[in-house]
Structure formats: structure tokens, C-alpha cells
Amino acid sequence: MYIKGVGMTKFGISDKYSWQLAYQATVDALKDADMKFNDIDAVVCTSLEWFFSIEKQRHFASMLSSMFQTNKPIVRVPAACAGGGTALWTANQLDYDNVLVVGVEKLMTCKSESITDEFMMAMESRWEQNEGINAPSSAALVADEYLRKFPDTTTDDFDLIAYKSHENGYLNPHAKFYGKKVSIEQIKNSKIVASPLRLMHCSVSVDGAAATILTKDKSDINIIGSDMCTDRMSPFEREDPLVWEATSISSKGALKQAGLGPSDIDFVEIHDAFSIVELISYEDLGFAKKGEGAKLVRDGTVNLDGKMPINSSGGLKAKGHPPSATGLSQIYEIVKQLRGEAGDRQISQANIGLAHNIGGVGGQVACNILKKTRG
Ligand code: COA
Image (cartoon, rainbow, N blue to C red; front, side, top):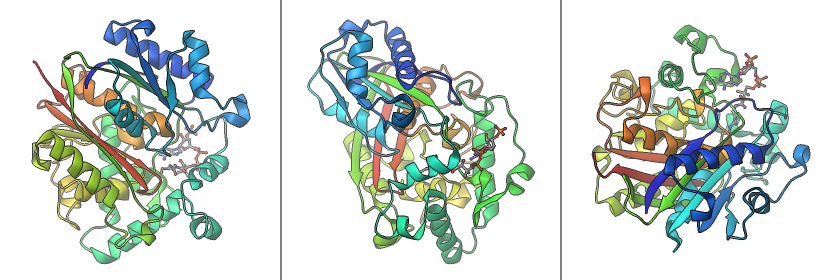
């Protein structure tokens, strides 16, 4: 299918209800597509509904029906932090002319401790949860193992990854850290969250919503590859915790549909939940050999003016991470880049972009490849 419109809210702390955020992103996308809600045939929505305890609302699909006064089919596809990418993949399988995909998360009314607990629900209940291993500490174990196995890589490389994301987020009006400069010293001196990962090596949780409108009519942005797959919940249940197969399998699947190889991709939005996750994703997506991902950030390949810019939006690190909206905000960024509408962070060679969205610690991954069709 093609993409006709995109919309998103500013990511950060919002005093709006979650459904108001979803409404705003949807209206933005409809306006962008020059469509009315009545033109939509079906909706795929995604949310983990963490706002339940505050808003006492756990039927997002029906809320959308009330807001838009519709009886059209609306299905909710929650998939941990991969909700957005998975909802897009789902919508792309449907036999409707026009499908709205909308994702929202509202978590900043909760304290970090509760947010951490919620993220832990996407982790192994028998081992990880029992041992108190949360998302940052699970990523830290992977980082430890990576640094042990590939001693040429150091935490300085994690710093460079985070620095690059903040440089990009500084330029993105929708990003939590828009207009806020972060120095490499601030990153190096930030507090340890789970050794070796510091605060600045972690994504930042935010409130936010994003929406995309898919259409069968030819439009300027084509989805040329879309794949999704799952894996064992814990990286330590897998053959090699440093290879996240859900990323390699889904990216290979999407590339195969598109008839492309990794080097044909111009730019990427990677699910950088933690700097180590961005690093191993360079490798699992086929952009570097295992153990050599750091080269891409050291030589500037992944910078905004590099050969393959990564996370021009600022990524989960600097734009922010409202779990179910994240994957669709990646689509928003890619569409803006392909159309040449990304303002100060515009990439010069933007013809084909890949969105990589992870749920849990690699337990589910959706990869979607978009191409500009006319220009
Ligand atoms: N990067 C940069 N700044 C951050 C940040 C991050 N990752 N996390 C929080 N901050 C900032 C906040 O904006 C806030 O700044 P302010 O005082 O100027 O508003 C300040 O640090 C304190 O925020 P707070 O939420 O109290 O921090 P915290 O110490 O409770 O939480 C983390 C920090 C890193 C533990 C938390 O952000 C976290 O758990 N991140 C990872 C989320 C996660 O697991 N995602 C799952 C991915 S699968």
C-alpha cells in the first residue's frame, strides 16, 4: 500500500488524556492526506493502555468509535514497544482501500518506578522478573557481554551514539529534547542506571501519539517492504544474546520484498531503547559485521550528513519513547524526510528509508521500508 498522510503530537509530558492525543495525531494525519474520517474504511489502533489506572479507560478501539462517531471496524494491536510498527504491518495486510493506523501512550503521570514495572511486563516472568531484572538491567547485561566479547568497543562508543541522537533531536520540533543541547561530557558524567549503562545511554519515556493513513491509491510514498517476527522473550534464552534474530529476520524479509540489500537503504530510524540496542541493531540489520558496529558511529556514517543517517528524528533517546506510538513516529520521520519536509534535519539523499521497531528486549520486531515514488 501507499502512505497518504502522517501526523504526530509533540513528544514529552502532556496534560491531555490519551484519547485526546490520539485524536490530535489522527486529525493531523487526515489533514496531511486531505481526507475526512468518513473516507477511512478501517482502523488499526495500538496502545498498551497503561493509562488505565489514571484514566480508567481500557477500550481504545471503542473510544475511537465515540470520538469519530463511527461504526467502522477498529482493531487494537498491542505489541509491547513494537505496537506502532506491528500495527502498520497489520494494516498493510488488510483488504481495505484506506486504513488509519494510530498509536498512543500516556505514561508520564506515573513515577519512573511504575513505568519500569510496566516495561518489565514485556520480560520473562519466570526468571528476569523474579530476579528483578528490568529493561535497563537486561540491556546492561547484553552490553557487558558485548564489551567482553568485542573489547575494541568501549562505552565511549555508547556516548557517541547518544550524542549523535541528541544532536538530531535538538533540530526536531516534535522531540522531547528539541532545542536542548547535550554535550559529550554530560553524557559521560550522567549517573549510572545499570552498569555499564548511564542515564544518557537510555531512552526517555514520554507521552505521545502518532498516526499514519494507508491507501491503495498511488501516492508519493510506497511501502515496498514490510515484515514482522517474534523471538524468545529473554536475550539469554536465545542462541546468542548479541544477535537479535527478530531484527535480522524481519529486516531480511522486508528487504527481500523490496528487492533490495542493506546498502540500498539511504537512512534508518532504529529502535534505540538503549545505546547498546542501537549498536547491535546496526549489525543485525546488515549494515556492519558483528562486533564492528562502532565503526559506523566513529567514522560519522550514521550522522545526519553521513552516508547512512540513523535516527534523524533524535530516536527514542532524544525524541522520546511513548511505546505504542514510537513505531508510527518513525514512519512520520521517514515520510517527512522522503518528502523533503524535515527542515533543519533534512537528509540530502532521502529516497528509501527503513523503520525498525522492537518490542521487549528483542521479543518482537517490525521492519517497514518506504520509498519515494515521484519526485
Ligand atoms: N535521557 C536524558 N534525560 C533523562 C532520561 C534519559 N533517558 N530519563 C530522564 N531524564 C531526565 C528527565 O527529563 C528529568 O529532567 P528534568 O528534571 O529536567 O525534567 C530528569 O532526567 C529526571 O527524570 P526522572 O524520570 O526522575 O529520571 P529517573 O532517574 O527516574 O529515570 C531512567 C531515568 C533512565 C531510569 C528512565 O528514563 C528509564 O528507565 N529509561 C528507560 C526506559 C525503558 O526501559 N524503556 C524500555 C525500552 S524497551
